[in-house]
Image (cartoon, rainbow, N blue to C red; front, side):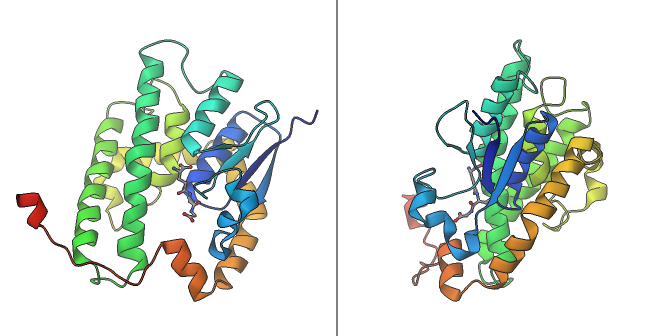
Amino acid sequence: MSETLVLHGMNSPNVTKVILMLEECALDYELRHVAVFAQAQFAPEFTAMNPIGKVPVLEDPRLGQPLAESGAILHWLAEREGKFLPASQPERAEVMQWLMAQMANYGPLLGQLNHFSLVLRPGSEPYAEGRYRAVAEKLYRVLDERLQSREWLAGGAFSIADMAMQPWANYLEFHGFDPAAHPALVEWRGRIAERPATQRAQQRIAADFNPEAERTRKASTGEDLDRFFGRTETVPEADFSMVKQ
Ligand SMILES: N[C@@H](CCC(=O)N[C@@H](CS)C(=O)NCC(=O)O)C(=O)O
């Protein structure tokens, strides 16, 4: 049986983190591009693998069924290979804490900041922009403060928590925050960027994903974009009366 793993994805942070792990573990894998700007994630073949319609999805012959959710994929690969997840406690639990923090906080909330402050016209959604900017400011600050006293995010060694977090931490400047105010975060990011596996991952992404991603993004229709960004006709006005009841 072929031991080649297949990763369905695109050139985005949640997919990049898995490619970092595949390279760190020197596994044999194929990348298959999913054209999210052309609605390929909603095709029945894809939703049969992940009903939520999001990349990444890993097909691993050793599992025998597709696996979605980048945190679950990183955890599976760490268990499969016995790498990048400490065997003993409390280090193992600490790595899982930061992996979960990335999955539950950094990914979803920085993703919303992308949506509100970068996709929409500036000023068109001031409440959302302000809220997600404040959340992001805290998340980046917490990361910087934590990394001031340790080389790696959790567990005392480079782990799946670092691989999960680094592609999202790369948004710091894009989100308008000052790198000079986050020196420990920037140094840690650099340590990961310099790893040979990270450089190989970037080369694979550039070769196997970027051309098709660029082509399908430019060819996307208004309907494709509405579906991708979840836009609907009605945007309700903010009403805080329920909060005060
Ligand atoms: N919690 C999921 C999130 C995956 C996710 O948001 N994937 C994005 C790309 S990074 C996607 O597939 N977007 C297409 C869509 O939402 O339609 C994970 O970490 O795997």
